[in-house]
Every structure is written in C-alpha cells, then in structure tokens.
Length: 268
Image (cartoon, rainbow, N blue to C red):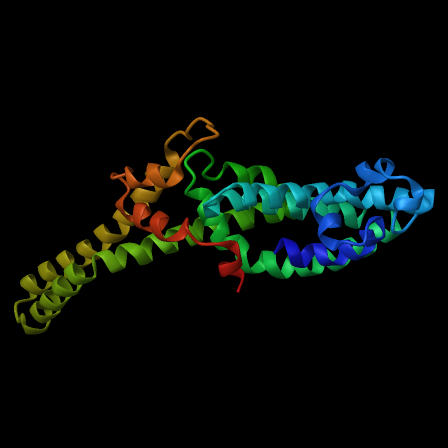
C-alpha cells in the first residue's frame, strides 16, 4: 500500500539524490548541507530545494506509518486503522493546500487510496471495534473529518452492522449442529402433529429457539460495546486479551481469525 502510493511523489524528489530508496526513507532536505556542491550528483537551485522540502514535509506521515509497521514484528490488523484514517485526512489536506505541484500529486495518490480504502475500511474497521481500548471511539473522531458529520453517522452504522453480521455468521457456524438437529426434529413434529394445540406449542418452541439464538448474538456484542474501554497501554497485547476473554466466545472466535490478517491481503 505505502509503496504504491509513494510512487508518484518519489519521482518528484529524486533530484534530491539519485537513489529512490534514499529519497523515500529519510527527510532529504536535512542532508542538503552535509555535502559540498561538487560532491552532489545534482545540485538544485533554492526554489527546487524549497519544493523538495515541501514534499518531504508531506511525506512524514507516510514515512512514520512505514516505520511503525517495520518496527513491529507481528503487527495486528487493529494497528492499521488509525494510521489509514490519518493518511486519508492528510491526502485531503494536500489536495486543497493551494500548492499546484502538491495538489497534482495528491490527486493521483487520493485516487489510488480511495480504491484501496473502499476495499478495506469495513473489515479493518471491525478490527478496531475489537480493540477494547477503542471500540467505536475512533470512528467518532475520524469519520466526521473524513466523511462530514452527516455521512459519518451512516458509515459508523455500517461498521456496527458488519460487526453484527459477523457475530451472527460465526455464531451460526458454532451452533450449526445443534440448530440443525433441533430444526429437523421440530419440522418433523410440525409436519406429523395432527393436534392443533400441540402444533401451536411446537411452533412456539421452534420460534423461541430461533429468537434465543439471535438474542444471544446481539447481547454478546452489545455487552462488549457497553463495557468501559480499557486504559491505554503501549505494550497492550490484544491477542492475549482476547485469548482470555471467555465471556465473549463468539467475538473471541472472530478476533482470532481477523486480527492476524494483513492489509495487503484484505485489499487483494
């Protein structure tokens, strides 16, 4: 993700140095005065250096995101969401910054980013809900900036709905054998029962069973969301927390499967 988005701007700062990796991995303008003019592969005029400086300042966000993931041996998916939101906001600011060459590059990057964002923001958003330090809090902070106040509410609701859908799907799989057996028996009773009173009784039991399954799904997620968020800790181990979160068995299954995914896998 970062490499593709940085491609457009790396070419603009290659003049700082001939090496693309050098340009992409460090603030090039900090090195300008470390070398005499005759040692530089390309000597830039002051105006060109100002442009390079402006571009490098804009690159800091992307550079910090890259550093975060490179420094984390096994980054869990919940780490990505706030950084991706920050990139979205940074790109929007660049597009309207009033500097022509920055706006042009930002527009190209924004077009690529939006395709990426549309693919991954839902499922990566779920990983944020599964972080007990944040749950829905970051959506309330970032989405109004990204979408505007009105649309933000709809987007947050989409994330909530996706969470309920996932819980329902995982819960259904976990209870598949039990449900299938009960439904088969109930269907047989309903089909063979000639007594109206017994038919109604069996039907009510059948409906109550289905309602109980759905209520369990809703209450587990609702209870989790209603609980207070955890205090912030830099060394918080989200996988260990969910491993011990026995009172949320369905969410525990989801966390086990979803937190280990990579952003590149989701977007492919």
